[in-house]
Length: 222
Image 1 (cartoon, helix red, strand yellow):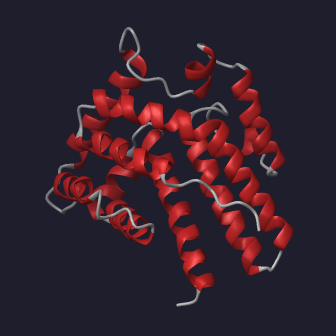
Image 2 (cartoon, rainbow, N blue to C red):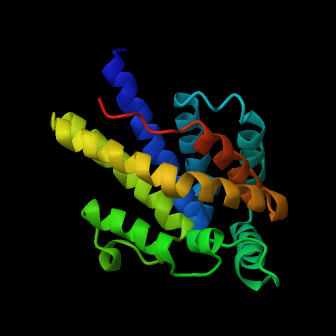
Image 3 (spheres, helix red, strand yellow):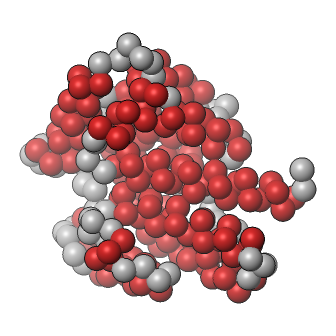
């Protein structure tokens, strides 16, 4: 396998993981449960982490997710209810709030502050329409994860089309998002979720996020 092929595989793996994380931090729904019980979620996650050399250190988390959620005997309605209760408890109903989903709360102490508009500007710079492309506030953790996946897909497309400037631009945006927004925000949120989550799903996802973000500093443009 050539170095170029290896690079594409790593980009695809990053895009896949960030897409899964975006799904994980939206309100849980039947699509998530179906993917978990069929094994699609865990298979994609395992393969992507393997390609990024992270599966070995996260073997326990991957095994726990598979044991708890994968299989035709799983009662989907009960599993969904557990996730809904855990999500609501952590992110909405706890007083004081156990975990906030918004970057601005961590940085400035309340919603819709400078960091909100800074990350929104990056979406705009990447050609995204906030109204059409995202259903949540710009600094919601799920939106920032989804944006990272989008940037990795953009880089892959630019490489395939041999558009070197677009490759550099995608890498620049990845770097800015990670260094100024998602790196610190996502790590803080993950540590809080790991501390307060009651379900295996959110406990494992939180423990996966921490090394992913710590070891996933975007490359400098070449």
